[in-house]
Image (cartoon, rainbow, N blue to C red; front, side, top):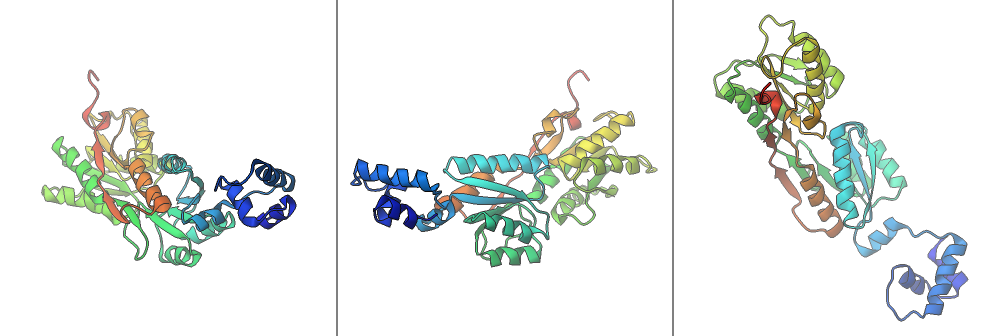
Length: 322
């Protein structure tokens, strides 16, 4: 059904239908307004929110692409985006897509007639091309590098990791292992490596681990087989760290007295592990606010690098009386 169908049944012009549905000019008589609303009910007409948004020059229906909604960090990010969108009377559809699969996610979102999309999945070149082909207004979140022509909001991963590793060094640790993907974002690895070499420390072992709890637990099995055990671990995500904490607990190793653990993300789980995780905090709420303001209102910066703050908890400093 279209507005033309509603206008025909209500015996009014299409602009009058628009006035009624958008609560426009008040010179429409109550009787005419009632006829239009009755026609809407009888026909089951539902306004196309995306098309209405385009006519008004603003977005009401948005897509949000994350690597995995099952990851607590991205689940929390989705909630922040939804909260920021709701404050601006917009609706968000969230879908999961790993790098290299963003084009498929865009097709799904296009079928829902979204007007704009936020992308928090790291983009391969094919993904960038897919975003450009889609014709959708796009904002990139948490990206390793900017993409010409697309607003990009990212986090200082390098600085955040370096601060966490420096914290471990300042606590007296000289052998600090790195748990993270072998081919992951180089900024996290570089933050660890540069913090170590800046204090003339030999790089500790890099044990490959993907961003999962199971991989973090398995990494501990490899770590415990080393001839010289590190006294601290930096895990490149909370999920790796949580798995590592379980592995250390099962091995009877006290955290942090025997091995301290720090991580990156500060997801909602970080403060509820035992011991609670020292973690680099990602400012998801601030990023979501800036992205939604740019998409909906067209105001604010189109590129920003956010500081990543270290939140110190018991996994590196110990709990009082323990």
